[in-house]
Image (cartoon, rainbow, N blue to C red):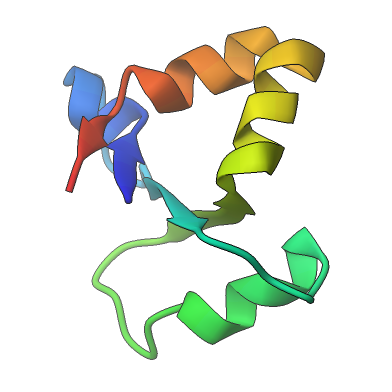
Length: 77
């Protein structure tokens, strides 16, 4: 799991959400349909959750390199 975005880089402000990327080994579900399996029931701030396989993250590095770089620069937790 990687924690990235404004809370990690120190630029969070009131209303900032937490950005997390969970990397799973595999999934038969579409990426957007996996999120509900991992969302916490309660969280003190908003959360942007991305759940992808390593292969999808590698694909993202090619198709959306700037967004993938933000995730890669995050903190492994």
